[in-house]
Image 1 (spheres, rainbow, N blue to C red):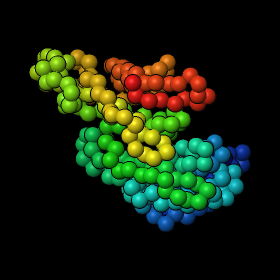
Image 2: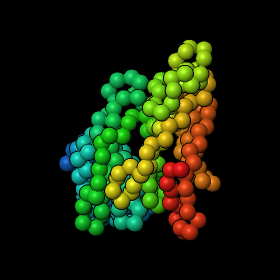
Image 3: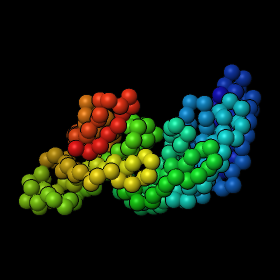
Length: 242
């Protein structure tokens, strides 16, 4: 089965084994933002007003409809984990180039059983790497890797930053890593910064993963690693900045 838009305000699911056979249809209150799968058997339909409806993929039965006000310009991805729907959306969509360095993301956590908004925040920078996999990779935290081009973070001297880009005399930028508590949405500890290597100019972050006690941030021509604590006694991956 495949689900897709049939208009700006309506989506439908069709049977792949019998092309053209419609299984179910759903109308939105606003303009469609995104369709995504927060779990293998569920489909999420999001509009540009921050409303998200969860439906069973096979039957179209509604499992809940929620409004995350901080995702006021539309949710675009998410993951359902232990009864909580974690959402990635836009508080402000980018309207000027370069698009990856403008606008502002939002994150939210919704308890699906009763629709309670557990937390939400609209201060996530535009250079942040956000996918459903990022939401799932740790049991206690959401790792936020944010590309901040051409800037020097507090705690790093200007001379050492300039040394990372000797041909121009200007720093290439940095990646800031922070952890958000999944239960509260608050930061765990303090953000950690890494300057981009010499000659690397703020290429987009392509992937973030956790492996062997490190959060690994991959870009086109470089890789940065951030040490984290991963208690061996925990059955699921739990991380804290080191």
